Image 1 (cartoon, helix red, strand yellow):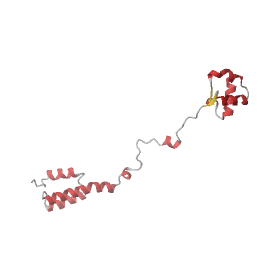
Image 2 (cartoon, rainbow, N blue to C red):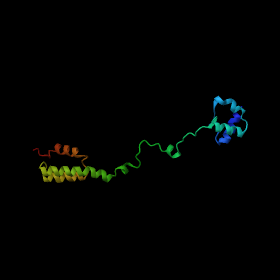
Image 3 (cartoon, rainbow, N blue to C red):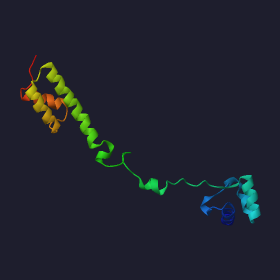
Image 4 (cartoon, helix red, strand yellow):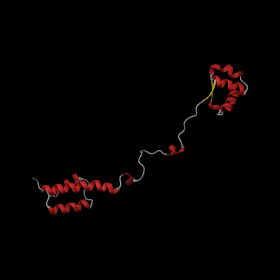
Length: 140
């Protein structure tokens, strides 16, 4: 007999039958209710309630399943030019220091500077190892 009450409660609460909750301890009172008016009284007393809706993610959120938060291509995060600037400036600074301290002569300085400009060296340490391997650094 409770199915009739559930159907009526669903209509009154404007939810589906599966969303109607009936207090199992007050089953007798619910079975006596056969009109919408009776159901409304039970809803006021809190014997019949509408269960809360399940929270669903929006379609956009379901679609967006990225591993990280970065968006864009390889060079949109750090542009090629910025990457180049961050490598070439320390190289040129190091070469200038070596020239001023007298560890490399003017001719080698110019040659190393051109190689650095051509993108030969990845880092300062790479430049240092190149200079040591080719015996271009004068030891003090």
